[in-house]
Image 1 (cartoon, rainbow, N blue to C red):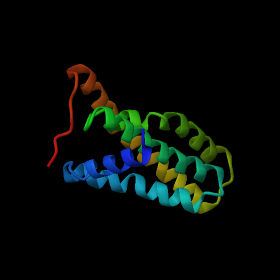
Image 2: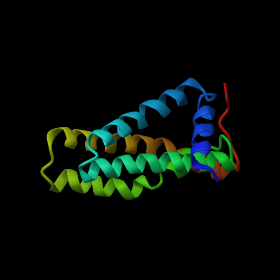
Image 3: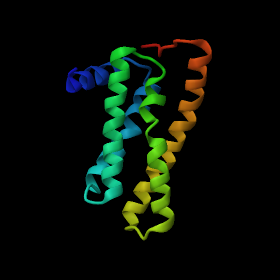
Length: 136
């Protein structure tokens, strides 16, 4: 198992999906990676960055075993169900730097939007069996 090779193949494969998915696949994680790097000395920044890295690794491993499976999103984002309560706790109980506060808020909102997209996809997947993303 070569994680770097799998990540590169996964990234290349994402480029063959419809443009809407490609745009979401860039605009959703990229600000989290950049913000996580910016706030890396703060625990929530590091948690967000590592959560995003874990999402990439999980997604690449699902793709390696089941290319273009519609479970890539739901499985790749499942660990965020553990991270979100921590982030909400910080937002409601801690005095945070204004930039960090809004970064965490952004991550929470987009992660909830992503979950709202992933849940119906996972339900349809299990109702219909294997289903895959169509490629351009």
